[in-house]
Amino acid sequence: MTRFIDQTAIVTGAARGIGRAVARQLAAEGARIVVADINLDGARETAQACGNGSFAVACDIGEAEQVSALHAKVKADCGRLDVLVNNAAIVPFIAWDDVDFEHWRKIMRVNLDGTFLMSRASSDMMRERDYGRIVNIISNTIFAGTPNMCAYIAAKGGVFGLTRSLATELGAYKITVNGVTPGLTDTEGVQETRHKEAFEFVEMLQPIKGRNKPEDIAPAVVFLASPEAHRITGQIINVDAGMVRW
Ligand code: NAD
Ligand code: 4PL
Image (cartoon, rainbow, N blue to C red; front, top):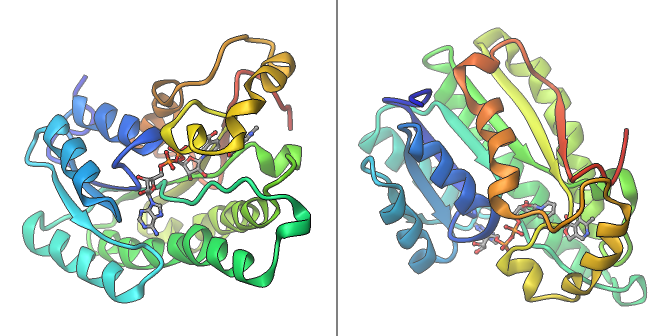
């Protein structure tokens, strides 16, 4: 398919995991991918695999100057921005008793502030052409209240609210803003934490058995990022093999 021919897409956190799968599937349909990640080596591997003139940029989404520099480069090298996928996030496993303000701020800085900074800069560029697709990767934990992730879930709840409000603010410019809420997914990030011990329990709650893989999440993201989704904004698609209903 060729839904993204001539388009430029920024995918944050695409050095690995769900972001990489989204980047690969957008690129398979013609998009040029700007892989923005703090892991430059991984980002370069993703860009290489994507082809279409895709490139990697080292960027901490929680730092306003780095987000500005990223957008200046996209403007100079690509001249246009069609799609932003806000995927980069820290996925912590932390008991409530260990949650202090330092942890809270660390998660908010990246998962919520970073999503704001990226959305602010990208939508300003999209507005120039009266076209844009913003897709926020949220999490089904905002519905389930999953244990050991309170700051993470609070930040994702913030991204959920931002999805609805930006849909309103940006509609006049024909920019849509939607979210995807994955369930527990087998990624490198999850394998680094005790979340990996939860697969059996989570599968028990899923009507469709088996582990979610990054490649299973990406098609919903690609759909919302596509031109044909132009009448859908402020919405959430839940991709979790049916674990939660909302
Ligand atoms: P991951 O840890 O495997 O990958 C995350 C990527 O984000 C990494 O490449 C990392 O370097 C990058 N990143 C982290 N902080 C960054 C920053 N400050 N600036 C730029 N890049 C940064 O994670 P994943 O499991 O692929 O998760 C991707 C997204 O999906 C996240 O938004 C996560 O909250 C969401 N999600 C994941 C799951 C899951 O079970 N894996 C479930 C629901 C939602
Ligand atoms: C159900 O977003 O959605 C663990 C870790 N379990 O990050 C998530 C579930 C995790 C999730 C998530």
